[in-house]
Length: 117
Image 1 (tube, one colour):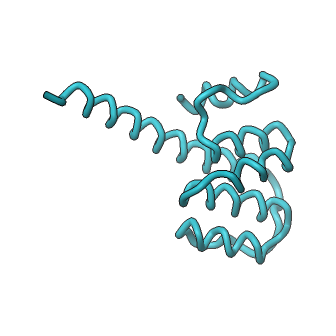
Image 2 (cartoon, rainbow, N blue to C red):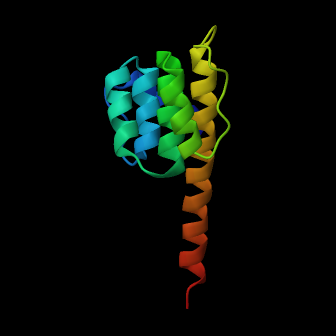
């Protein structure tokens, strides 16, 4: 999925099928449903899920919990202060990165499938 398509999908009532749990969490967050977003982040695993989990707690103003999840994501914690200004900017950066990783993984899998004997 391309980032533009991700943004366009926000006009729908449900996230597109095939999105990873971290991307579903960001989708629900962009729709304004923090509880659904948090549920997806909690169910997600790995560093990507932890990064989204950190973002959500930072947005919520829970700096201590955000620091913990940034650590789990192996990323530097951002400032302890709650968000000031555009929340969507940070969400967009995380989403763009996760979509890029997902696209690279999908392309690599497709390449591997075509080169198998």
